[in-house]
Length: 256
Ligand code: GLY
Image (cartoon, protein in one colour):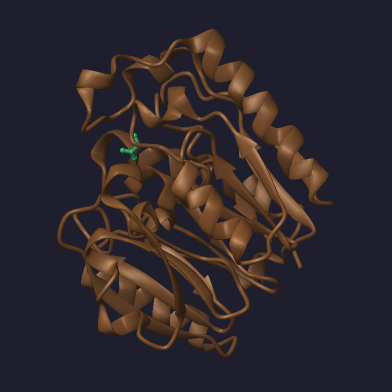
């Protein structure tokens, strides 16, 4: 069960975040702020506390908190984001982590290793990590060595199309996995019971399990129906402004 979450308020430059979908237009700052507040309320409804960090005005993508650290119950790691414009965001997360972890239990990914938390999916004591344009083999090796000290196993999953691993696959606990596109037939996930996301609703694959409830993005009816059929209570949150800059529900928080 999760007790804590950490989020960072979107900055005014959120409209300049990295995007692979410029046709969706730029995020509207005020709307992004409102959606972020709704997201925080949704997290709170699942029984967690939410530490809200102040905006980082020099980093348009900095509300995507998940990319700068990976957190587990007893330890955490500060990442080294592979996107050049995001790399220094990681310098601002350790102070927050120290409120929850001993310094000795906080690791660091260092160059030439790169890693972004969006590429990391925790399933029990196993971490699946996307080998992506943002996360390299050296980063995964450093991650695996650090978490092995705490009994965790790491499995690398090469990505073909998506930005981050969790852009396309997310674990809903109870052996259930929400999968889309290139992950539907990926042998890495053969052992899981799959909830298949249709191509037309690919963005809807980024849902988060929160203490038995699944928070889902608004506007993905097939995804919603599948998760309801699997027996989970649902909270829907509008993430339209974050979608415009390749961000989703998991990207917006650290959960532990
Ligand atoms: N805009 C989110 C990212 O590219 O990291």
